Length: 281
Image 1 (cartoon, rainbow, N blue to C red):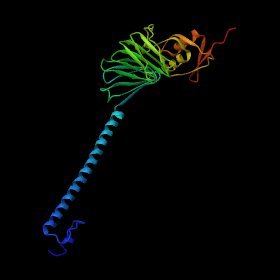
Image 2 (image 1 turned 30 degrees about the vertical axis):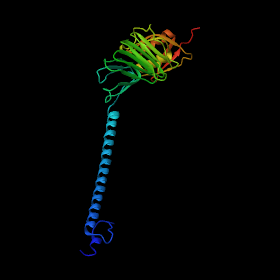
Image 3 (image 1 turned 120 degrees about the vertical axis):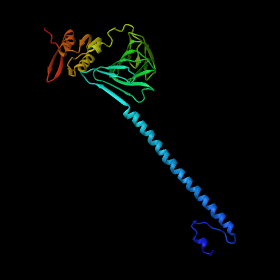
Image 4 (image 1 turned 180 degrees about the horizontal axis):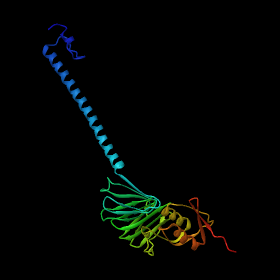
């Protein structure tokens, strides 16, 4: 070989001290090749690991998107309408007017959770815990029939069949209800079960709306929901109503509320105006 052979050999900055034999040169060259191959294998393995990590991340993100986007279900019953919903396990829910219900169907087999804003009657199939979450309380059952009302910071839960646990989400206070019992949230605290609850509870599903010493404001809001109308009360003082109205006829419902309370109503430009009757004196 010529003296310039080593300079032309393509091994980068490989240096062989002068005065050593041919075998030593080859050993040095082979060692360099081996190190280069190992380095390339490590680089390939590193790239493959990064690709695999990206692929796993994409699968996880895609699965989460599918669960939380495509698995999310929401139902809304507008004013003037009632809506029946069947849940993935066969449980049934009837939504009162202006009520929203949401849940995740993809996670249903692991947790039976629903979120409620409004009022609904639940008929739950037996199984693992079934949770109804509202702004202030969680109602927990295994399988039963119960009604949940949650509007404008007012909460009332009524047990019709089976048993119900109502949990204050802020304080973790827990109240157990038996059939024909109910509890309300007042001043941030759940009341003890009312054993004198009327058997007419949840009769709204039949279009009957019973009130016992209820504020006129709340009664008129219920009329708005059931008939999809706007009501403007010109009554100066707080009034309370005990009685019933039905959602089959608007004029009859207004009479049932207004006449016993000595109030008048009229419809002006699509707006129902409630006023106190003028004294005959």
